[in-house]
Image (cartoon, rainbow, N blue to C red; front, side, top):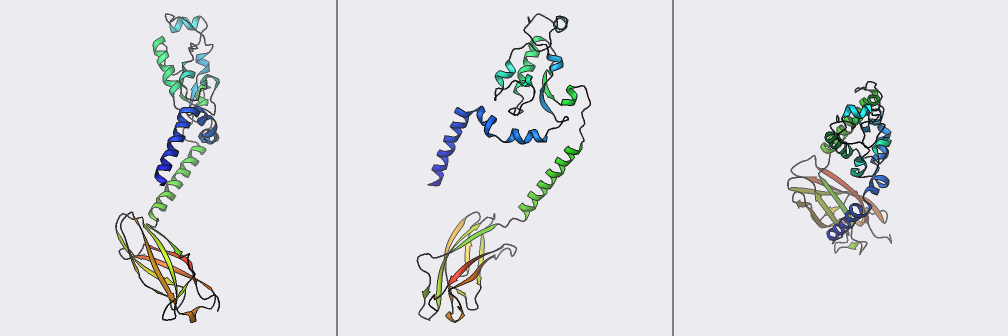
Length: 278
């Protein structure tokens, strides 16, 4: 039931984002532009318009050579606005870098195609740095970059450790809600639990089930077979001697241990209920 509902939700939101909101997602909803601007410095490669080369912009005849255009007082920008037309967020890169820019480089391709048609050098709009645009030398190795590299290595190391330390097993233990407890013919107190066991490993496992918390606790079944990547529900009955129950509720702990791999072990704490009239 959940699958078709999620499918419809994805369909609706994809249609809204791509068909209606479009660039509004990048401008107002996407957090990428907000945090990337904090990480920039004057040596960061960004999509930039070379204002010194492009200004003053203006229309001119295609037959006008690059040198003739310079002598006539024109910059390389012919003010065709193609860079604005192809921008998915509708910004004008000639006004400088703006937070709406997603660095897709569509404006670079559009401008280069115009430069080729005009016979002008490419790179009026290009990936460059603020220092390079001002005629200064750009530094590749700098403290900020080294800090980002160290943070990236730390995150990758943490991720690798988490994957290696990941427990390929999960289970929940829920006590039967329709009854608090039962008294057996032998005078013992029993509680019924439903175990939901999920085998997250890539091989089948047989798990050994134990319970602890009271001296006389016993299980009616102590093994669970779960295929790789699947889950199983198992109903178990836990019994205890009423003489061991000093209060209405006692904490007990279920333990699952994979027989094929002793490293795979998990515990879940729950409660065992007894005679509340004691």
